[in-house]
Image 1: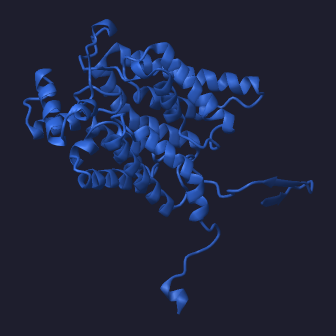
Image 2: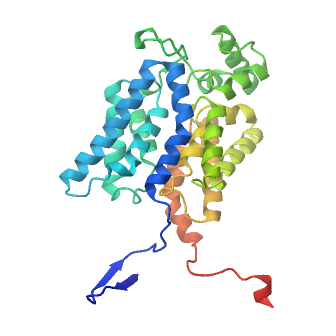
Image 3: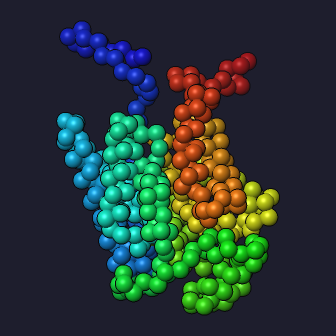
Length: 346
């Protein structure tokens, strides 16, 4: 426990960690928002006004809930750190664009108040708040949160949205991986989302993102663009995303699933880039991040393969969030030590 002495000879005690970064939390949140901007704009263009309203309602609800909770509990109001904005935006992007607005607001409030403020606020939450909000809505209102709209353009009204299954949902109904992918390709072609029903046209549509799904999870191209930005700015570490995607790819291959389809469909890459890299709910050490990402990829594929639910990324990351404190104890980082060099060893 650290002890510092002031000029008035008063001792101040604080718990670890004691190493502070010069980069403020506001700058990190701003980088995440910039990285999320392409998928947010693409989602609004693809799914129209319902997606835009869900994003706005989620962000406003998250900020208002955090501020009101901290005001009631007589804590400093920290809306300026932008963490509530990030949580609200992430929640909206992992929900279907047709989610009723009051449900989105309820999920944002639950995410910020229960998953973050109840644990002590920013930096103290055990689980990713946005994923907790999504899991809460999925358990409470499964029909609404699994109703998908095809991308019909910004001018589409909510009442005109055509519901359909996601690629993972279609694949789940198939007798085999090949038959499932053929069905996905046929659906894309029938709805003019792909140039043809062949394999590579299907994969190209999945990569570009012109298909049904959560507002921010469809375009792998734009998610990867955001990942490159965050890596260049050193906002995220590469270990958890790479091992999560890699383990999902390998296990899909082992289990007889199409590994490329597994990686490109659903929220795997979005979760790997924006959720598994959370500073608070992920492990601190490099080895811990590798195990965290590997575990999340494996669990996601196992849920997809053997579970009734076609997607498994949210629960996979939340399960590994629960394991993060154990990984920190199992693989502790020794602060204040310098690794031995070959010269020093001599």
